[in-house]
Length: 154
Image (cartoon, rainbow, N blue to C red; front, side, top):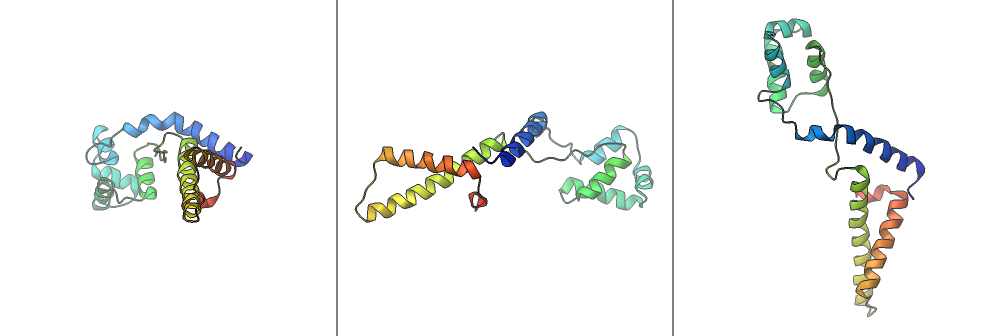
């Protein structure tokens, strides 16, 4: 088993991911969220600027930076607050869960380590059977999953 703290952290985050993973498919509106919300509620650029305590050209710059992907989280958070909205921010694992992500990476690393050792043994005339290789890879993967060492991500 993984250390209890790491296992708990993975499980807690995976539960949170489960609640928001449907958001992956949401595509931001053309022009960005700030502009779309502002226009939808009938707020002018001048009104947004006043709420942000900036000039209208700076408010427009916020919208342009969001559209281009160069906006900071702080600016986006401030714009959301000015629009009386929440900023929701998350990272989601591509493999669905952190558990899957860690398992996949442990398998890759185990495979690399065992095959490197098998190649070395083969060069020394000590060839290993395919079945023993598979078992060794699985055993190494289990070892890596116990501790989830930092080297897993090198």
